[in-house]
Image: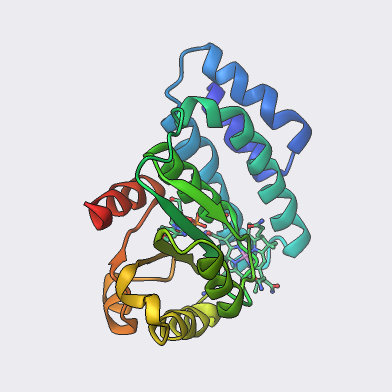
Length: 211
Ligand code: B1M
């Protein structure tokens, strides 16, 4: 088994205590950090999701796999993200109300920070009121970035964009959205300024929105 496959196997089986060392071993062998992330972790989570859909595993197994991936990302982070300067301004990021998924949002936050933004991460299950309050505390914010992973929280994403849309500061900021069920079409429909499919393109998008 290759070192990257070992990482994938441990993530899939939720072996959080072993994943960090396996990621380090893959790095030591010269594996590309992006390949470790994509093939070792994101692909493994896709398999976990498929197994959940097919009733082969249940929520607890999904949760331990997520925790294992987070351990791996901790080791990988310095190799993926360069030192941030915050020079491009502030960006508020959150997973919308009702949604507890944060791995994708955390990767997006990491890449955007690495691109030069000061990221304020409000976490998961965040109400539109909290996001608006955070903007009021940080009126120099340039972008609000919203993540949603469930088809059932797409309406929450819509409501959040609408609530921000009613604020006097809407014209001063850009809103970008993403997450597995989100499409460019949906982003346009709810009035977001940008959509991106993955963490790397989210960083490119964020930069283009403030250019
Ligand atoms: Co959940 N879950 N989950 N889950 N979970 C999915 C999303 C699911 C697809 C699994 C499946 O059925 N195949 C399914 C959703 C189905 C649907 O909506 N159609 C699902 C379900 C049903 C549920 C529950 C309802 C299960 C239940 O309780 N019966 C429940 C809901 C809880 C809630 O949120 N209210 C639930 C719970 C959980 C756990 C808590 C156990 C755990 C999350 C733990 C955590 O995040 N801390 C979990 C997990 C781990 C998953 C899967 C297996 C993995 C998610 C993940 O981290 N992927 C997932 C299956 C899958 O994704 N295939 C699944 C890796 C991550 C890097 O990818 O998050 O897509 P992703 O992020 C990507 C892009 O989407 C994008 O960039 C990221 C990096 O490339 N992106 C953005 C994300 N945000 C962005 C923002 C941007 C731009 C790009 O701009 C702002």
